Image (cartoon, rainbow, N blue to C red):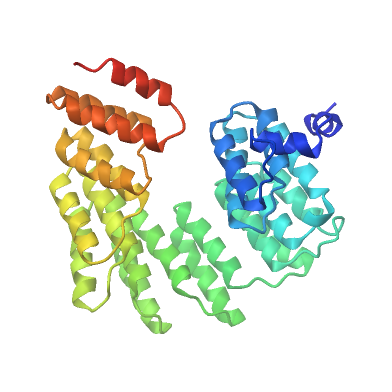
Length: 395
């Protein structure tokens, strides 16, 4: 008997489902509260049956962004532990729900299969559209192509793009072409994307900033800088201005190549042209300078971004704290971590343990104890480990 069948036949009442998500069974949870509870539980759950049970208890749908995130986390957990049959059964079970026989859910199910690198199942889902009462559409086609990209099955991207529009009477749109160009760029065959641009011209589909962003990312990763210049010229030909999103792609690409000084020069250039950098711009640069071991420059950029009104996200804080600990700059790591914790963003256990150990190593035991106290006030997991660490600190 399959896992889903066993779950269906289990004597779960509505009250039992509520207690799955909240130990306080007397409280009725709203839909959003159910999803938040499910997400928190799934993050730390290892039992695949329990993960499925939690998802079913929350009645997740692809309509709400938080529900989509929760489903994605669940599929990631299951695929990382190689529970592919459970994923198939779980998604098949969801597809049988009358309220989920929609274009939106079919599209999302294929993306989830792609995330798990289960492309055969994604393609089978596409072919089941009519059976499920959903007309195959360009949106569903684009989701299938995206699923192939997530699975890094770039040959299948090409096959689907060439064969499926004709077979199912679907007219590709801008998003279709952009996905295919993205696949060429990610697979190291960016020049092949020029043929897609030519087809777009023939079909009267005008490329946008996303089109050229994929081309730029691809040529940068292949270190074909002359082609980068050609792409920028093409953008002007199509009447597209070089905005902050284009600069962010270029800066990010240069940082990945460890050309951080060139990336910083691009920042200066965009500012001189009157283009205002945003938080993404600074985050790319800060991460790039940290990885290059240039912590002084990274800290300077962090202060510059806050001074200019750009709010750092959690990853920006986590990156700085991690690399400062690696560089044994424990004072600044402590300062940044306190700012982060004040925003309810606590870096992971390993990073914070490294910071606590670092503070102790420079005879700042009081600061280490205070930091542990702040961590325990803001986390729900591994509190017992922090208790042990605190008890073992020098008096």
